[in-house]
Image 1: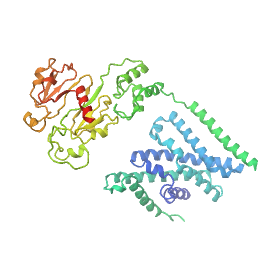
Image 2: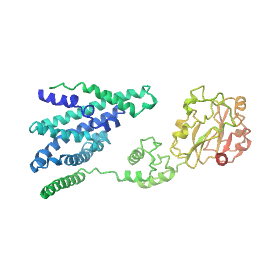
Image 3: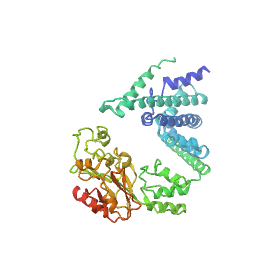
Image 4: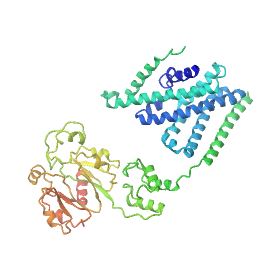
Length: 197
Length: 276
């Protein structure tokens, strides 16, 4: 139980994908303008990242390792993620149309989200370090990472909604101030370093 | 060495093939019966995504029309042509759509209507209007700072001599400018009605005469001259032509002492020569 908590908390706080590892900055800045879009994107990311960590784990363990093709992991994972997202989209469209509509454009956008590829690759790194990280733990880590992504997105959308009304110097309006604010939020997350030893 | 390459290529290629086949299968298996008509309707729409229909864009409109939630003539930009096409696709009758055009009901340009003060603020009618109703002497007049020009996606509006003028050929009656004007000067009027009172002033005639040379002074000559009784008075001071009754006889233009009633055709010609 304690281990589960540690994995989730470290993925969410200590190794926050956006604010500490700087992965997935594009959607982080792109869809954080409003809370509603941020929530939509978060839902899609949680969904895809969790499934991705399961599938890529299986592909790596049962496909690449036995064939001695570990060096192809990146390209193989890109292939897997792209196909997976497409698959999920098709299935969702048919089976759960409300969810499909809620996720909307964000679902296909995730295909090229580097945080998703990052979760797959980091899982494999951990797999090699921790002597065959189990599927359950990989999945948990992927889920935790996506939660961290969502949290960063939601927090930052709150920041940006407030910035709309702030009196910002002309030269910094728009993206510059967003990047500065992102840096500040990120710095606060570095405070979680060393939470677990 | 070579075997490694072949294995790598074979594995990745195999995976790609596998996923491709899988996706092909799922797309067949989970195919959603897409409304064929939606795509067809989408094709005949103008595709400007201007939102004049009240929906978020042409795609949304196409879906709504196919679902029967929107009338076939709901797209003001496409007008009659699009409505007929959509009606053909859906197999229903379309009513004749009257083409509307936006008209700015003010002709008091800089040479005809003076100013209260010198406005040096940001170039926006909305901003100017918040300062004592704008710099124009006439409270109801066009401020000529181009909020409507910026709102128009079709480049149909120009500022000529400090007054916004709509090019009726380019106007699609999307209504964006109507919303943008802080003075509510712009109205969508059926194109068939060629005569319009180019004044919105609700001031008394004496005051209008003092500040503007082309304002409606509420003399009622036009009301009396109109053979079809299409002209009425708004609040007793401003003439208004009912476009449904007007048959474009032109009597009102002839009798109007201040020339605030004009035919849009001659006005367009004048503006063309003025804009050079």
